[in-house]
Image 1 (spheres, helix red, strand yellow):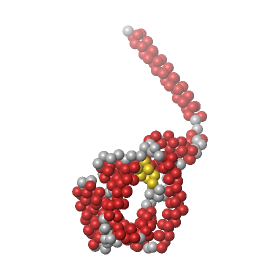
Image 2: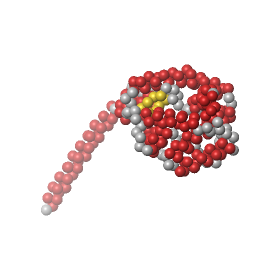
Image 3: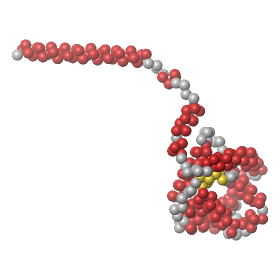
Image 4: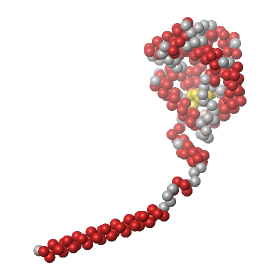
Length: 265
């Protein structure tokens, strides 16, 4: 019995010594491999940001897919808009900002916003949105009276935020699909539904004789030019600012998603 116990103990001890020696040899091999491995492997990498960015973005274009059957024409209009913006609109905007102090430009912007609230109100009513209808009605009343024909914006100061609504959103509210993507000359990204809706909004604004603004617009093209200048001066986006060769695709995708969110809101 004693001999058996000693034999078992010896066997167990031998196995332990064998496993210990095996573990030590593996650790030694691992240390040797680690010692030959570069301490800073990233230092040996050669990374060209522009090339890799292009490869990554090209592989992501499937996710940015938008219905654009007229892409060839849209791209030409996009490049036309880019040149027109760079060589015509932006120089005019810089001169506009230089010639007029900020408080005057703010007053001009408020007046056009107040006029735009007429179509915002009309589309809020058509979309059966009572809260937005009430808010826009309050804005029109306050800004037209206390705000002196919209030069000032007391409505925003008391919490009546501007509610952007257009006939394209109204059509989308009633289930009309967006249709193909369209790049409008000078006006930028749109789609077939929204481009048609824009015509309705323009027609409605000229038919509603709000503080005689429609007659003024019909008689003086300079007011149209001032409105376009004001809108461009208050638009932060500039062509080429995305710093990517796929700006057309990104702009198209962002426009589509933004419109979907506006209609769902």
